[in-house]
Image (cartoon, rainbow, N blue to C red; front, top):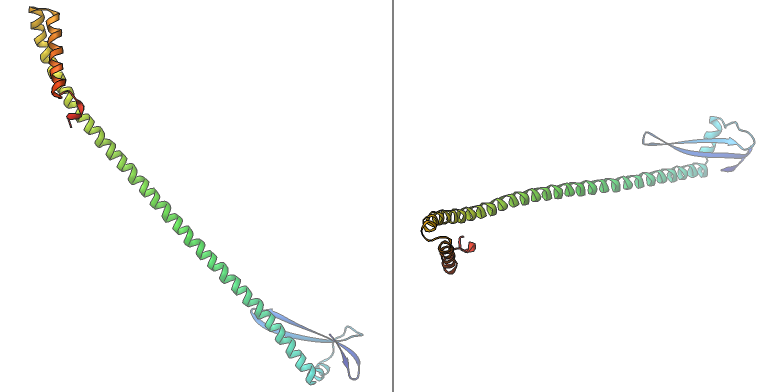
Amino acid sequence: MTLPHPQRGQLTLSVSVVDVGGSMRSSSVMKRADSARPYGKEELREWQSQPHIGKWLEEVDQRKIQASSRRIHSAMKELRWIETRRTAMQKSLAAAKKAEQEEKAAQAQYKRHLVVSSFRTWKKSWETNRYWHMRISQSTTRAVEFARTLNQRRGWKVWKNYIQAKWAARIKKGAAAPNKAA
């Protein structure tokens, strides 16, 4: 900013706010408009002692401090938002992991259930088959023994009629039906 000097013509004033380690520091340098040499301490004191320049410097400092505090506030707000998002993502990841573990546990439990139920089904069918196999083999053994004697006496026709009559009687009674065995 260029200001009129009462005795020496024009004056250039620049104010900068430097943020060093979180603290605000303001430095003012006044230069002549016609030369690059800064003013001396006495001249600087003389300018700062004038009320409108001192007030203007304070206003500039206040504006710089306010702008810096606004930037800090917005940065803090952004950091809080990032932290909130990070927390939400961590929670959702934990929930997803928990759901995955529960799903794996449910699948393992279902597999165990399948194994147990298939074993029970197999055992039941095996027991049923074993029962009928035993019944049929016993009756077949008896029939074969009886057939030998019959064949010796009367021949094949009698044996065939005997077997047909026997199984017809069994089917009529319902003993040969597998669903009745359970």
